[in-house]
Amino acid sequence: MPGVNAEFLALPLTALADAALSRARELGAEYAALRVVSTRGQFLALQDLDLETSITSDDVGLAVRVVHDGCWGFAAGIVLSPEEAARLAERAVEVARASRPVSTERVALADEPAYPDRQWSSPYETDPFDVPDADKVATLLDLTEQLKAGDGVAHTRTSLQAVRENAFYADLAGTSTTQTRVRIEPKLTATAVDRSTGSFETMRTLAPPAAAGWEYVTSAEADLAREVAEIPELLAAKTKAPSVRPGDYDLVIDGSNLFLTIHESIGHATELDRVLGYEAAYAGTSFATFDKLGTFRYGSPVMNVTGDRDTDWGLASVGWDDEGVAGQHWDIVKDGILVGYQTDRAMAALKDLGRSNGAAYADSARHVPLQRMVNVSLQPDPGGGTLDDLVGQVENGIYVVGDKSWSIDMQRYNFQFTGQRFFAIENGRLSGQLRDVAYQATTTDFWRSMEAVGGPSTFYRGGALNCGKAQPGQVSPASHGTPAALFRGVRILNTVQEGGR
Image 1 (cartoon, one colour):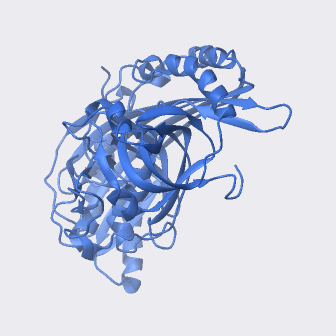
Image 2 (cartoon, rainbow, N blue to C red; image 1 turned 180 degrees about the vertical axis):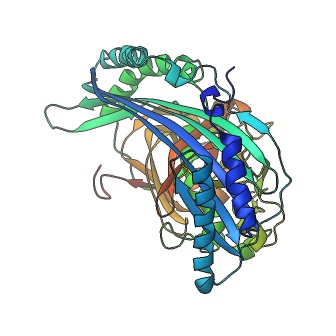
């Protein structure tokens, strides 16, 4: 299995670190770190059977971040030379000095051991960028042809996103880490059109983005061939399905949908910088305020949510974060009670929480590391049942599959989610599809209504490659593992009646 990218290791990383850190030390920095980041990305898209988009991008740079006289300073550039690294250290200290007269608080960082000369790589077999573009397109085209040949499929949309991220970090404490992360996301969507009315329905594959290489596209884990074979029949049934009647229903929500609700109503709500108001101007705050830690009932007693940066399949997994903190895992919600947040070193120190749990990340050398979402997962019940067991507990309800649109307020409290597929549940059995379904709740009402979570057989590894935050905007990847779960008495809206599909 490939490890840290050899081409990246050939860069003069040690010389850059020596130049930047020695200059920062000379200028009196209390903390200084050099990052060198090289990211290659690719996006391929087919509209029907035509290659519509093929973009490959490269981003390489270096940055120095310091704490000087209790203030942050930052500078970035693109020239990978010791002279530039030293100049950036000087510039970062200048920025910190300029900030001192207007700063209202002094920066302190939670302690972290040093990790000298360490390497880490996400698990992958084949670097997507070692595969010829023609071979990638041929594989996507083959899947698309199979999907488009299905009865009733008028149009298809196929895409592939791949990223290889290399990062070097070194700081004054003696940490020096080199890492490679590879991630990939294939996606196919089918559209059926009613020629007489002009109405249409769509359905998308459920394979999530993965911390994996090219091998994932044809793997049993992604299972795209099976999905492509099934979608035309499912889509045809969806076009003929009745529109949902609004009201309160019991829901069985598949992990392929629930992961996004976790992301929005738990993941963002428990970022400590958001909780404390540091993200308020752009992305809002959080109802899960700090005074609630350790006492607040977030959900029902069957709710157990963890954060981590060390799950082998996690999109947010790393060996060390962008402040030199080792990957780890911890509880966020335990038996329904809020017990933890996601923190970087400054936020952890600010609230006397001890060690940071390693949530610092910047998506390029041009950007300042900030607190970002980690892998946030709802844990399955080790003795929990199957999907059929959950459905069997419902007399009148809906089974929700796949994510689609969503909306949530700036405090991560009031929300609405739709999905890819909805199946009526009658007397413990699935009884055909429904259309125009959205579920609506407050975060606490929703999670407190969760009566049961499925066992390991229902577990789904969802996630997103493009979680947005900050100004200037940054994107980050995060995974959300979740079992299927049973919720009682959730409000269902009809999306047509509420303003159009």
